[in-house]
Length: 337
Image (tube, rainbow, N blue to C red; front, side, top):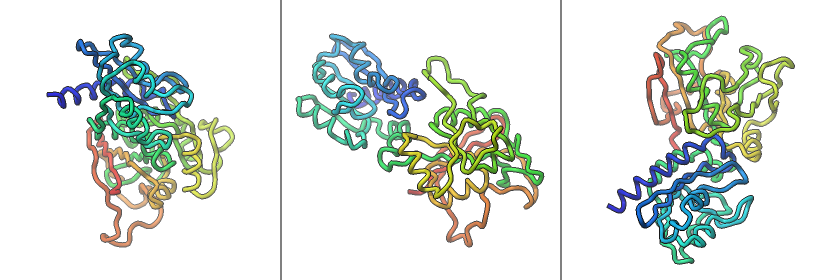
């Protein structure tokens, strides 16, 4: 029974985290719940950078009810002083009896120190409750802290025969309205969006979040991501203001990570998609496939340049999620790593 309660309340903490996904970056979006000894529940979620973390928000809501309580938090509490004080000390000072943690924080400043500090203070700590769900929710943050690189999402909209533009260069719109709304949601959840200069010249995209709006109760600040162009954008292009970058692609991605970008959305075109793909820089593929066929080889393929020379050397991943959006197919594909 205890484990069922733990899973249920960690699920509640995950829901709290989801509501602040758009305001916390480059900090992680973390949720917490204080379960008082009398059964009353108090919710918390991380605020904007420099403000209180999830545990502290929930403790403040609980007040004296925190004494002897169990605290559920999706990510390991911090044990160091940054722009805010250590959450471990807030938990200790509040007199909580038990802390249930979703996953350990891989940030070198934390990385098990929070759990160790709580246990030193005599607080019971359990780690790993609903870990898979927490890992998925915090994937961009966890990946960034483990690798120093942003979590790279490659988004492509194509016909069922794999073409992202037709012979005359037209691509607007291959997929329907609902697919475009989902693509804009991906932009909103990304810190930066990247395209090649060729795409800017051909399509003149604004790369803003126009077609998606957060549901009621979801907190957000600025939805539009930072815009990055590989190459040089024309002076009057809609993508401005943007960052124009040139050089070695892995080095560019590493520098984007050093700037604090947790999730980078790559929107093409075919040459940029191919470069990210062949260099193994893509962490998730978001494919939007229309029930349409270009019908020939003169249309633009998803990836420019030569493909795999044989079936044995073909890239293979794993299907993570498949759904229907309006009349289109949405496929999320993950690398086999």
